[in-house]
Image (cartoon, rainbow, N blue to C red; front, side, top):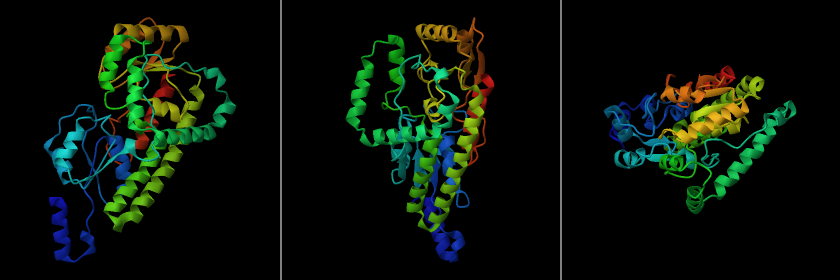
Length: 356
């Protein structure tokens, strides 16, 4: 038991009142996940955020207050080592007795493999008629079923085999291959899974289950909050579809390949990414590929990110008529809390629509 929980327990015993009942201390890695945990804990407690908004989750130096939050934590929720590799040893050292939940490993989580090329698989937007999009909900259910089967059936050997196969691909520049695999050396799956609202709805239940196991007195509140949160995300999904529907024939390039969960959920694929990984700069060959794609396919929009070099986007846009915009996958300019997640997803759709 943490020192903070022990103090609360002693206080409750001495005062003899239910008002001092224990609430678990909870630490969370990034702001979008923190938002989901905060939604489940509403009316009961407030989780601590470890990686502050605007900072890169891939490399981060803990502040003393964040280290204390981990030390005092009874539960830790994080995406997993693929996103924050440095946090693996940190959790083991500072929170050895905490119940730790890696959400990428949670049952029902949709996992997508890394895309290895600058140019993604071509999609004919003309084939996506109004009828196709009216039936998208059924298609998405099929995708979810398939993703769940893939998640349940995969094992560590398949991860290793896939990594080995990717290392042998010759269809992209060697310089990109080396840089990309340095950024992808923590597993075969893309860790940006919070950008799937379907995953977010799954995780609300996972979070409620873990909190209820640690704090059964508040289980009813946790599960009621999770149910309300799922309803809110279902409404959000409808709003995003309505925002994207008028621009579905548009094509866009992203700065780095972080958005395929969002693209898959909403059947709105990017044409490519300037950078394979946010841990490496693109090679000249990769930039040339992207510039050729923009010219050949009349790309409408190239989307940057707040924390990356705007000069690279300017280089890619040089000589083209494509517009530019900003996508923020972490909500770096948003106030942490339960409202952040729906704001984040809504902002992504608005930025895409505005740029087309």
